[in-house]
Amino acid sequence: MPADRVHHGNEVLCNPPGRGLGPEATTSTGYRFADAFAWTTNPGESGGACVPGAPPTGRYWPAYAVSLVHNAGFRVR
Image (cartoon, rainbow, N blue to C red; front, side):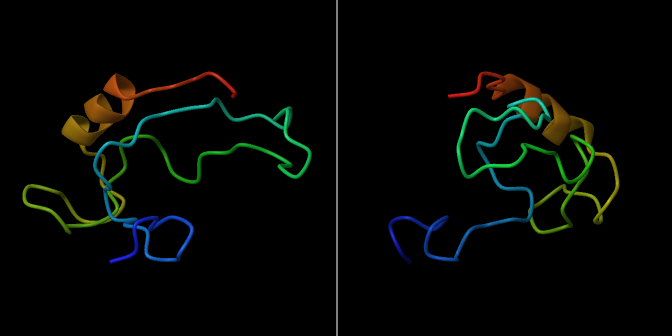
């Protein structure tokens, strides 16, 4: 497995652990080549039954929502 999975196309997208909300959706990113920051699903929505206890894709998962808030970083770097 590559050391940098995000930049080498091997990112885990099904309920990835350690993720958090942020930054807030905006078109004022502060980055020259970033047009917007946007959430593509509702926070807490399951990406699928890929880990034990996860509901099917699209179903709200309270435990995952809590972890997203716990790991939140709303600051634009």
